[in-house]
Length: 445
Image 1 (spheres, rainbow, N blue to C red):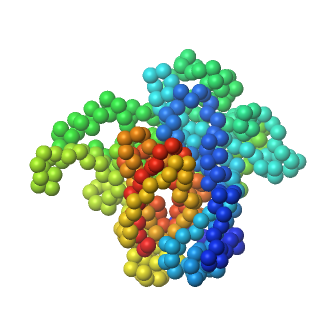
Image 2 (spheres, one colour):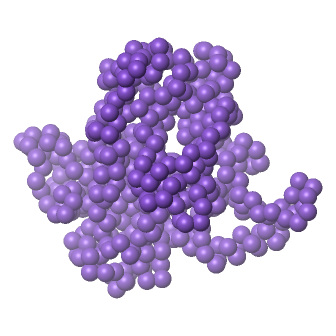
Image 3 (cartoon, helix red, strand yellow):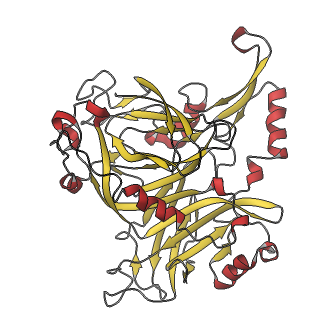
């Protein structure tokens, strides 16, 4: 499922014992923050649910700082079997790729529903340029697949945005023909420019599918009947589905569609796939009377579980790619939960927890962007009543067979939990003016 990118082993920057990089200078988090803060929405801010924004910032040419401890000169991750500092390596640098994506809930009139924003800037040596110089046309063409829906042969024209200096398109799932009447001047100008389009055949779903009186009524009715609500098989094509990954496939063409930037014909493939769960994002919800032989009742949310029917649902959907949510694929460089290498089995279906910590992150602070080769970790935001939130950043360190590498950014609020896979890049940003408190647990494996 993952493969090490061999040439990036030579990018590792060794850190001698007793020394430390200057993380206040050229911190790679700054580049990610500037990227997602630089997104230029097509309509005014009042038309978006800010906390629903979910960014994908693709990257390449990753460079890591070397590991700590006696093995500080061991650049090859297959040989990093010393558990000192959780086999941690911080990111030193990376290059941004040409495409960036955002999905969120947009709002117009009495409708709130799915929105997908895609932007692109050709590199200097872009295949779109006939002479090898900068691409200067006022639009590009885009082939796009969102989940199972596709543009097919009818490409989408993506205009140049003079503010962001990128080619940008925003696609709404609005169900009617009167969107213009509900937009502010910025939104109507974007529609006139072709930057904001309505395509409910590509981008699917409304907020009411998962929140609000109708949804709550259905869930409460099931509770009253002694049944739980199962999310996985509900509204499966929803572009903002709370637990299903959303796969995006695209390719870029020049205005005449006779030159292509298409990842050598394979198309670029991205995936919104962060494992974020909580009171809003869950596998199942219900009500239990006399819980575990007690008194009264409790409402529950199944977040991650190897039990019940959840894994059977996922196994049926994913087929040979199935892996239990609390499990991991074991590669020949991993140590298993018992410290054995090479592991006797190719998979572990459970999560081994070896530590539990509480953290309080100060205002305008962040946990640095890093990875552990083997460890799984979970972050639970437990901050209090003042609306504290944080931004979780994750990304693939090695190459996933199904998607290009990208940093994914999502907002966490109280009660949200994010599961970090072994080797997955991660960071946590608190850009607010109060402390943010987290409970964290994980295993060395």
